[in-house]
Length: 193
Image (cartoon, rainbow, N blue to C red):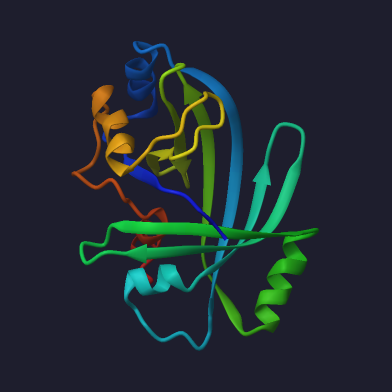
């Protein structure tokens, strides 16, 4: 399993206003793609505690890039502290040929579909920092910053460095939460928890 730190914040302005903020700091589009996740959980799982649910889901994931589509069954490991902040996370991807066959496999293993998340992602960098803008289900706008950059030669050393990227550019965020759980928000909005 690959482990990596990241933060996710919910942006407290619209996409156009955020683009204006980031354009002032010379951010340019590096990549655009889409991820479609279908979350599954065992039919035997009994807890309604959101963080416990998130630790026990398996996703069928479709990544749609400019030149290709890749499908996975994905498990994301998450360890939370007592404040609900993610202190360790990692993921395992198992490539599959078909979304439908992956769904069929999980259903035959007694899993049920929980939620769907459509994530339109725009990766930006300005030579100093890198971030991903994420429009989720056409309802929420998030920024995710990962420890390892893909388009600039940089690795953030710790969570505090990741958080400073948000404050450095005066990006308005909802609350003071640097560990927003997109799936948890979707479960709440869907009435599942």
